[in-house]
Length: 160
Image 1 (spheres, rainbow, N blue to C red):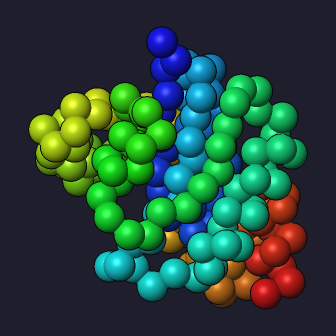
Image 2 (tube, rainbow, N blue to C red):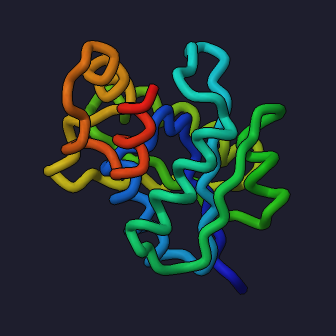
């Protein structure tokens, strides 16, 4: 049986922390779906299609091994996508206690709704302080985000 997992996120934009989680998860599963999800409670900087494109380029540039599918999902439950592709796990990066408190109830509900387990991955300490929100703020104020994002994202943000 193939071990398939989904790494969901807004990836607005993708950071080096995201790539770290994706690379490590790719080593644990036979197939990994990196899923750009629409979060209705957030105002996005980048359109979903641009986020998918930047993810694909960043994963390719990082030479991450494994069978990786990049897709988007904006309608329905995340576990619906997971069950549609045969995934038995969701992989979530956890940076702090705040993330644990936010993600735990969702993990319990996802397991209850569809039998999909959630795997929490701790970040590489080099990226533990980085979030997409921080990158958006630094970039919007003209700061250098190159230490926090893949080169494809840095180039895109510099052009914007």
